[in-house]
Amino acid sequence: MSLLDLFILAVGLSMDAFAVSVCKGLSVRQLKFKHACIVGAYFGGFQLLMPLLGFLLGVQFQRYIVSIDHWIAFVLLVFIGANMIKESRGDAETLNDSFTVLTMLPLAVATSIDALAVGVTFAFLQVSILPAVSFIGCTTFVLSAIGIKIGNVFGSRYKSRAELVGGIVLILMGCKILLEHLGFLG
Image (cartoon, rainbow, N blue to C red; front, side, top):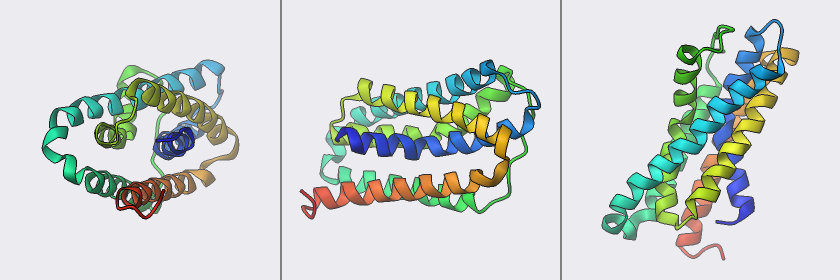
């Protein structure tokens, strides 16, 4: 997986966290730098942790399903992407302005579940996992910090668009992986 592919994937995975960050920004009256850091740390941290866990699970089963790994990657990414597109058409989430563990932890877990599945695909794609998950975590940190500011300044206009774009990106990455393994792309 090239650096450009990894960047595109990281941005796609970050879109859920970005969308929730925009909503979180809506709920904060007086946005402070520490709010952006808290949101970035939770979302970026879980976007780093979940694909690592998925990778560790995937490695355990890799030898059993190596002949169909590209199909698994394709199906998982298309499923996740389609779900994000579906969610982009839903109503805006209502969030409170709290940054406590009890508020942030469920949000961080919910926005990073798709990264767990992507981590499983990393095991099949022979990705160097530590640099990859670090890159995804850092990308999510930055986009989440930006998202909370956008939400605070501009409102909820960008939430559904972010989820839609993220879903499309993940579907395209799944198609690219499948086409590469089938020999249609170099």
